[in-house]
Length: 543
Image 1 (cartoon, helix red, strand yellow):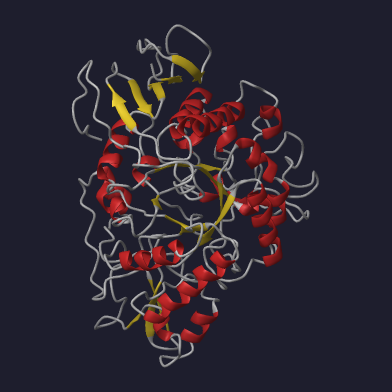
Image 2 (cartoon, one colour; image 1 turned 30 degrees about the horizontal axis):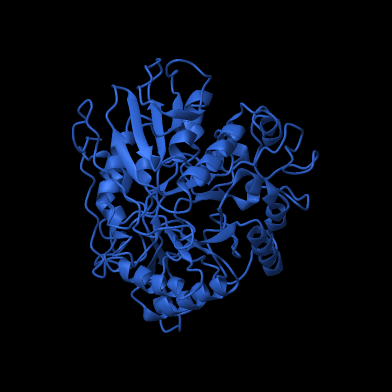
């Protein structure tokens, strides 16, 4: 990534992110400066011995999140589904998957989390449904069906064949022939996940009711799946090819040689979020809309915030896929420069699709894992941890015969996704504290050496460091929005201020001199020394 400007020795950069005027703990939205925690429900804790995590298992382990200092909990899909894509193929938007629990169980989880000061976000999938959803079952019954226009149907091109060249997430044509009605339907993911038609006003009305149903039950907001994908080109034009010399951002936005110019990131989508934001703001406290905005263009990412009237938060995938740690300093600068006034960034390195940052960024190296946590938890904005990040859990190599994800079994640009969905390691015993010692878990459990119980008792562990960083974030940065300023630093060293904190990170595998800042050291990721060790970070109170 290119730098926005030169960093001359002895010269401080201008503030890239300044606190909102008048922000205080009483007036700032709860998610500003918060630490959110993504939890893959099936892999957190099995409460009934069937080998799958469930909602009651989450409730039983809430004290871990409270002890860690988490502000909000994002649950992977909990709605009824045939599980062609493990919950991202919804068959009922106002229920709970029977294998995970009941509405009563979810209500109890929300209540118990609330007693600990933890908000609960659900995963909402508005781009597509399951082919088993009653809407699609009716839509497929005939061209005159009441719900036919809820989905994207199109005739073959003259001479036969799919209406466009669009490809789905597996690289196959995104159109499925439906012989009973003589048309194709669109699926940007699996054929069992037909895309909804957001040009149809009735679809808007359905989702307004869905939002209100869950907000009325106390859900604090939604992580919105495929938030960039709702509208498709009304003229059904072919996507252009991805140029061989495309930049990193173009490669992030494209797949299988195409740029999805017409099948995603359409301008009409912004109107949906302006509508939803009004609904979210009508509640007290306001509900949160957090978007999965899959784009490599930071200006496109910024557009989803609107004029502070669309999404409140939007995932930053250029950071997720950055070369760690070398590209992060400039990417942070570029992100903060791109966001509109008042918009707040999201920092994360792991999720259920792209894998775990301890593997992708850090290659399992404990020193780099500790540095990554320090950076993620000291940047201003909102930090999202993925379950297991706090103990440095790495991806698990899942043998082919045990893989469960149909989307990536045949290969995917982002890798086999089961590797990042394996059960949480609560202890080193058989079953890992996730399930019973004689129960076969739904996915294999990772190495016993990395687990919560052992690390909780070790003051020098990754878990202990993570907890101290979360506590430091809350205590020093508060509930508002901290200012950010990048400081002049020697090559290979990144220094910045976040509110009253001064952060210095050695981005290299060789020792570096500690810049003389005359500040009180509050935390360091390595052993105390005169300088900075390889991949070491230090947090101080600004001098």
